[in-house]
Amino acid sequence: VKKPGQTISKGHRNYDLMLNLQLGIRYSVGKPSSTQPRELKPSDFDPKEKFWTRFPPEGSKMTPPHQSVEFKWKDYCPLVFRHLRKLFAVDPADYMMAICGNEALRELSSPGKSGSLFYLTQDDRFIIKTVKKCEVKVLIKMLSSYYQHVCKYKKNSLLTKFYSVHCVKPIGCQKVRFIVMGNLFCSDYRIHRRFDLKGSSYGRTIHKAEGEIDETTTLKDLDLNFVFHIQKPWLKKLIWQIEQDCEFLVAEGIMDYSLLVGLHFRDDVFNSKMGTSVPYQKVCVTNESVPGQEYFTEFCFADSGWRDTARVDGREPPIQLGANLPAMAVHHQKDLGSAKIYQVILYFGIIDILQDYDISKKIEHAYKSLQVDPNSISAVDPKLYSRRFRDFISRVFVEDD
Ligand code: ATP
Ligand code: CA
Ligand code: CA
Image 1 (cartoon, protein in one colour):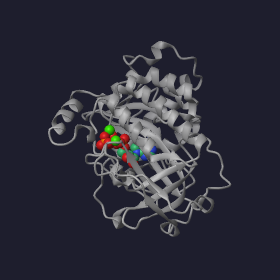
Image 2 (tube, helix red, strand yellow):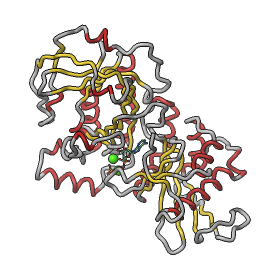
Image 3 (cartoon, rainbow, N blue to C red):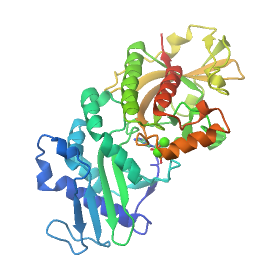
Image 4 (cartoon, protein in one colour):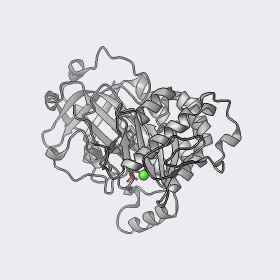
């Protein structure tokens, strides 16, 4: 399988930046003081704590020589993140090897609109994202409650797993801030389709023809033509956990996040287009709260025997909520009056959780409200955002009874 993204080798415009990042992380993770972490104190969460380290090319007592220009390196709340990595079962040596080992990182062709750059480690476990100063501020501000939240819900929380935050300042250049996080789609299963779902509808389509869509395309709300049927115990867990995670996000004043969903089709990818075809009958009218989203039409199957043929069997229970969850994806074919059913394995999590409802989002809301239905736009107050997000999820993930 061809890996996504472009390998960063010498000559790449961000080669030096990556080199600096790798030197910095090797230094931070490897330094003796951090190999024996002590208990956390409130001051460890203090954003004012300064951890700048100078990396001159000729090397210093603390840092190795290197071939790029001098840079400064800063770690944000290193001890907290060290504890977080432990909590998420990331081994320090694996972490360092994945990011700083011999295998180069891959730069993904910028998937978001924000202009952030994304890098993937060769082992696919970690994603590095460049972020704005205000996003780092938001993360540091929420860090203490985030820490408590993930301690409480462990691996079941669907919130982005943050592993560390750093800043690089090459002499004469702007600061670049990075976060390292878990890749939701790190799996032995190939991810065939991915969706970034917010629950809003305005502009939430990628405007691509079927033929232009492939495994690396991130589809959006209006492109989604599946409903996922999940066994009751898992569905209940899922909905409950999303409520807890959203409650956290509301308390932190966060909005504009997404549920990122990856689908692995259990049938061979080429055959999967066939699916199991079953006729269905429309029984209700379209969902009125979201104009244009016809695929949320209620329907029932003319033949109820489909569950026996399509049921996912011999399933391994998921090890954590957001990974490896078996489901039946029902694909609605509007015009044909039938649905196709695919056995899938789902991967998902809540991503992009560092946007608060700041002045720019308020202005965006006011401005777009003049043109379209205010409830269809992404930028809304965090409480509303969460409500709409959860409503949407409960329409897309339903009980497989
Ligand atoms: P914008 O603010 O315009 O929405 P952004 O630059 O903040 O975009 P994100 O929304 O964080 O970017 O991510 C963009 C895309 O990158 C996602 O839709 C997804 O495809 C991929 N992505 C982001 N985080 C992860 C992750 N943890 N695991 C896997 N893929 C991810
Ligand atoms: Ca986003
Ligand atoms: Ca964003």
